Image (tube, rainbow over all chains, first blue to last red; front, side):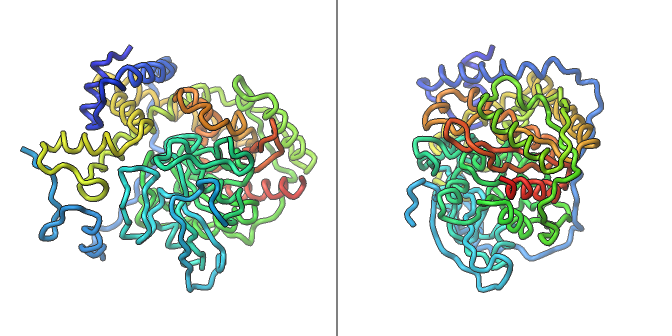
Length: 89
Length: 425
């Protein structure tokens, strides 16, 4: 069982925020879904995992990028070619 | 024609001056596929006002083929849902019965085609999001093999599963749209060079071995839906296919493995939405965690927040081994099961969905029950193989989809079989 405190902690890790009024409902739904996931725990993890997908890398050559002004156009706070973000400290 | 089905989030007419196979054809594009200078929201408030500075590879190819972009279609927010009720901008309605959902998450694309607003549309399929609405609305939808269509410009939800694919009123148009979008793109590191040649399309199923996995007719499949699909499989036999019952025992793990993996990937992929580079402006004077939390809480709907919570939880210390690692082992078993049966069989057949389109509001309150309706579509996303949904009659007065699944890069067999079936009914 996942407690309300664990749900609150997870929401904090993910920066998504939860109101007290939503907490009960989210906790109940998460518990029902996680209980359904328990079937996976009946599997052994001894098998070697194959990697069916292979990343294809290109040579690290310089190529054309999007124009800076196009990329900055969607931001609310562009400044000198950078984007301002909320303060970190 | 007015959009009475909420199929579109934005309607435009951007025609291409190029002459090509799609000249003069209006194509709708799902709103999680980037379109240069046209708002792209993923049906989320967190992308309100976002205007992509570039086209997705699939959109570049549409334009190069002469297509007219007819608008951006409604969807479940970020592709998370089975009914398009998780759109932040009202659900899409099913043109066959407007009191029912269009399916999801590409519900707007399906409603636009089924409602006669466009002849074809692009959708994306992470766990059934092309095939489900195709089945519910009575149209054709193809989920390509993983890697066959570039994901460049597709806003990621669960990138190890998802593919852009074609949706249309019939198999020939589906094949035509697929022939335009399939092919290599160096900007997607999982892209493969497997173009599709439309001149190879013919109505052909004679001599093919079609496996029918018994798990596709198990508990939870509506008996009227099962009857319509069984009749369709009988028709394939009349057309010269050899029908064989097969079993994929690992499918009991498929839904859990899918939801663990897709929520884990979503929790990472959706981390980028914080309002800094696009979307609602964060409060600049707050500490950054508080500023981002406020933007994300307001900008994401309940299902997106639920999936981010699930994914973050499944990846966190102490739970990773029980959920994420075990899900990867389950995926391996499922892949092996499919590859084993597809050694002997050319194709597999079963229902696309276990039900017909539910009424609006019927499933939205119970997320687990909604997830369970994906039980027959998620397995092929796990295996990476292609699958197509073709209309095959009705149950409870609503369309039913026949799902054909094929070998990796076996879309030609799928489309030929689907065309043979379509011509025979």
